[in-house]
Image (tube, rainbow, N blue to C red; front, side, top):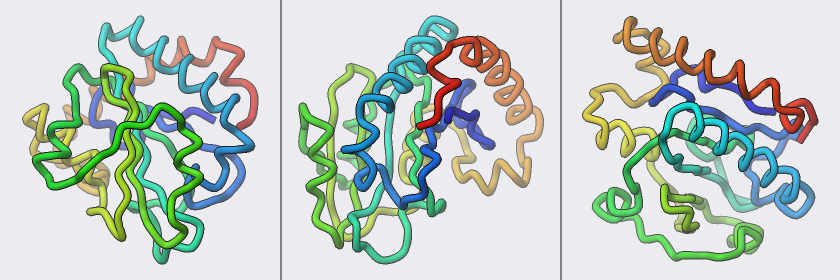
Length: 190
């Protein structure tokens, strides 16, 4: 399913969420890859048409035996964020080393005790970073920093510290999602 992020970093910030409960997409990828790619492609195309922006696609996931949970949410979800700036260099400055990948099935090979970050940058290239643990909400923090935003934690948005800005992003996102919901790809379950 595709939903609007409750605390969007940009207007149209969406989450793609499978109905099957797992901690990360690495566990579900073999079964859902074709459908997931269809949904992601449709969301990115629609958001690009509506906003004129490229998008970054990312997941902070776990290997099958990693302890704890990735980020803050214990259910697999993929972020799609309308964004015009490449994010790979921001990750490098944060000390995160990515390896370029051409095949998303590589996430199924993540060592079971490790966490990973998946990034499809604005240029469409795909990257994986694997280590024992990543900082929580790292992607949100890096995107907010690039935009000059003070607030990046979804908790800050839920406190509505910036009520007007948050409200505006949610309203803009809802308008974008009105178009998304007309696409039959979104009516199917993942």
